[in-house]
Picture 1 (spheres, helix red, strand yellow):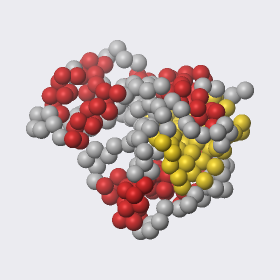
Picture 2 (cartoon, one colour):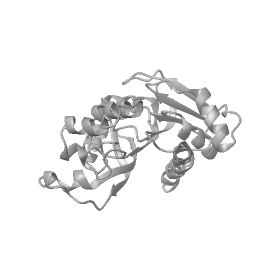
Picture 3 (tube, one colour):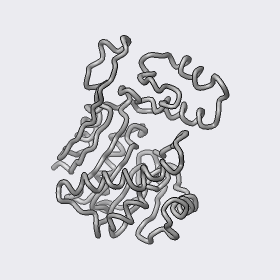
Picture 4 (cartoon, helix red, strand yellow):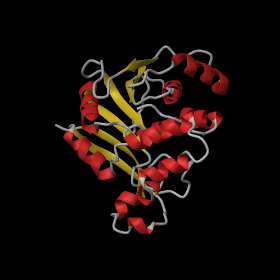
Length: 256
């Protein structure tokens, strides 16, 4: 569930998560009159923890727990927070927990709200993870999911550095993709990004909806991101919703 920045400038990467992502999360909740202040919040797929730091400082929850299958490097986060935001210490309300791919070492009903930002395309078993989220939420809790990009959309490979023209997953074979990524040298970054591309779960917007329903959620609020794209001939028979919907933000609540 970890997030990887590729070649993105670290200043840009930090700001995109510490400021922009946090602002979008808060505004999406606030649009329904929901405040995270004084609440118990979890972030599933927290990665480097930058979003969690920004969300803790801005939204002022009673507690925020970042969950990820890769342990969050707290020292690295503290260093980047000082470098890019002048934050000298991580807030005591913020903590991180190492979890398994399908289980959280968390008691039932521990959180009022759960958020997940750009993680669900990387999760191998979305239904199991969503069931865990359902378990650790209170009965009247709310789940926020942002997912971008969906696999079939223009940059669904996460390989825009090598394929700025987009739709590489439908235009080229795996061998051709790997060849372009290794034309100069097979850098550590290329190795990581190719591995992440090969392990994407290829979930669609409808597939995410089905996983939510199977896990005991109903969608309460939905914002689909759609872009104008040039459609390669190789995709002539693909449903427009799959290639045109690039991302989603949603609020989901437990069903009874």
